[in-house]
Image (spheres, rainbow, N blue to C red):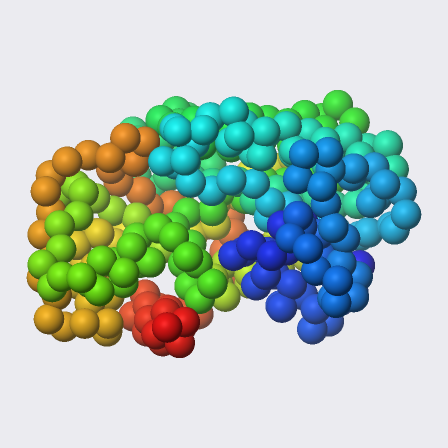
Amino acid sequence: MKILIIGAKGFIGSHCVEYFSKENEVWQCDIVVDYNTPNYLLLDATTANYEEIFSTTVFDVCINCSGAASVPDSIKHPQRDFNLNTFTVFKQLDAIRTQSPQCKYVHISSAAVYGNPISLPIKENHPLSPISPYGKHKKMGEEITEEFHTQFGLNTCSLRVFSAYGPGLKKQLFWDLYYKQKNTNNITLFGTGKETRDFIYISDLVQAIACIVQKADFKGEVINVANGEELSIEKVATIFYQLANEKVKVNFGGEERKGDPINWVADNSKLQQLGYQQKTSIEEGLLNYVKWLKEQE
């Protein structure tokens, strides 16, 4: 297959490049200047011309890993978040519509579209009630992705990724935990520690994308990408510091952070039906991440 990965220099995108390059012709696309990588397409951050990209090369699959991925930043800069997570999706799909309508389009969305769920585990048909600009814009991106299937017959699907982590991720919980312990052995986090997430290691996430590329219907559907395992922040923080720095004591201040949901765990039965199986436990994944963090120093 000939696969285009948009956002190829980012966390998910770079791992997709590594995985899919083993057996496919992969083209990379991003706003980061790179004069050395073959099949690399440089985008202008403000005036990206996707029509030119899809008119010059015929791709079998486009995986959109681009966009903003920060709840706090979406609150500070909602217009930027809207442009990256909504307007850009429209531009990509409209270019596929006019230039390469047979190309499969994989849109990386987020579990943030659910907000605080009314029932667990969260199925794909659960009502959507995002509680941050990021979640709302991701929901709009999904609606655009579905629209281009229903109105124009494009082959599309959206992946609601839950809490992805692993080497290459330079933000979010575990990144923060690592750098907070540089200055103190007594750390206070938001919340109570009882908040829960459904974590998925990056290699498992890429494996899930591969299953979807190969077996999904691409009829505008949405698919949860997670392991169906509910883990508390307190538990994963404890595991993390057992691996990174056993001297650290973790406290929880009880303060809620705006835009953060309380409890998440996915129903991933649809993903499992496509052949996905978890390969990396939270302990193994965090061990790999800690090793990578230490290598960065």
